[in-house]
Image: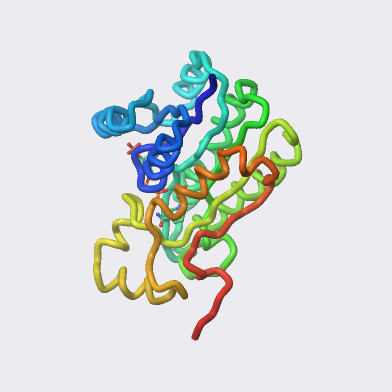
Length: 237
Ligand SMILES: NC(=O)c1ccc[n+]([C@@H]2O[C@H](COP(=O)([O-])OP(=O)(O)OC[C@H]3O[C@@H](n4cnc5c(N)ncnc54)[C@H](OP(=O)(O)O)[C@@H]3O)[C@@H](O)[C@H]2O)c1
């Protein structure tokens, strides 16, 4: 039997995906960096886990080599939110944003690809800001556009064996967004920019990621799905 790997399983969207998949009796393996948090999550969900920082490529190599199951799917719920005026964003900040949001998931995919089973599925996370222009988003929107571009090409290269799709959330309550969502006035202000009147929760995107892992999604590949409360293409004002 195969397993679905969830990278970033301690996070808001990764954990929600894991909870939904376990409620459907899917076999999963949780990957994240914080050991204590990961142990609690794996115990709660009765599944396997591995502490790993996917930015360390030799750890990724070792992890992939010792995998003794077919990989039925991978959900890459890792990334960052880098907001800065363009002229103040250093090349180092561009590089680290590209690594976290594009190169690290792509390196992991490249190493894991031969262990993917037939009819398997990979989900990457982009952002609403890769399609709608927001100030201060140059580094993050361009790195998330890169993962979307890779997704569509990989979907062509690996069809029909592996399906590749992207989810593009708008602001979602999570660790990485806490600098925006912990302030109630700021959170309420941003919620009002969404036609559906609230910011996202992990399960909004997690439920779609779980669906894209299922047999019901077996005719869906090369797509991007906006999970954004209508922010990207509806204007109610
Ligand atoms: N939240 C938003 O507003 C928002 C908006 C648009 C797009 N997204 C995208 O949605 C995806 C999921 O994010 P989220 O909202 O669930 O964020 P989150 O709650 O911060 O979760 C990300 C998780 O990834 C783990 N992680 C980070 N770097 C890692 C690494 N190098 N190796 C292994 N694990 C790592 C972290 O846990 P450990 O510290 O335990 O490793 C963290 O819990 C990301 O791609 C993000 O860019 C989020």
